[in-house]
Amino acid sequence: MDEELALKLHEIGAVKFGLFTLKSGLKSPIYIDLRVLISYPEALKMVGKALGDKVDGLDFDLVAGIPFAAIAIATAVSLEKNWRMVFPRKEQKDYGTKAKVEGKYSKGETCLVIDDLITDGGSKFEAIAPLEKEGLKVKDVIVLVDREQGGKKTLLDEGYHLHSVFKVTELLEILHKHEKIEQIYYESAKEYFKDPEKWQEGK
Image 1: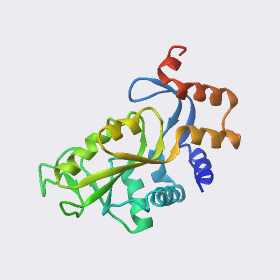
Image 2: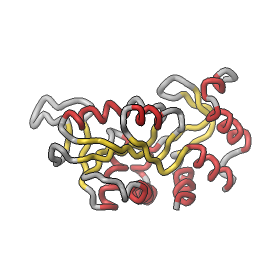
Image 3: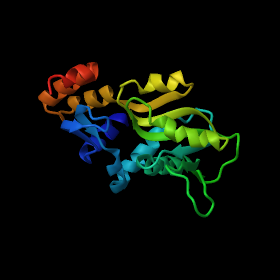
Image 4: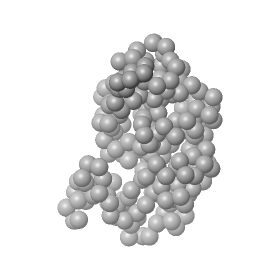
């Protein structure tokens, strides 16, 4: 299933190789754009199943998708597993209910946070904060892809456990095995994930 999903992500252009500038300003030889999933229902359904199966044994009452990339992904998980879903707003509404968290929930319930990927992990706290402020408990975060750049430790240091369907190096190996990556990009990506900052020096 994981190999099939990895190949599907490559097929729809969610995983690209080249030279890209990340949000942090750093360069990267691989770019993962999971926002495209909304245009590929079959792939989105596969992602929903993979994420749902990964966390099936965890203890939680509902799921929360981080806006905006993960709302579609969390919806796919919710539909696949029949789990309730909410999402934290990026900005609190100043009209209507003025909700910080959209959806039905009760204080004291445990919420599984869902996102598309994780790099250093810092942005996850922006989503966790309003959930906890509204009385929800958060213990676990799941992503489709862990870029293995410190995010797991960042979350663990604050008491949250990270789960992922793919580590980025696993994704890389699957695509290489199926000859979906040119050797030059494969070697470059391997070097990059050993030491992203050192890799920048040659770019």
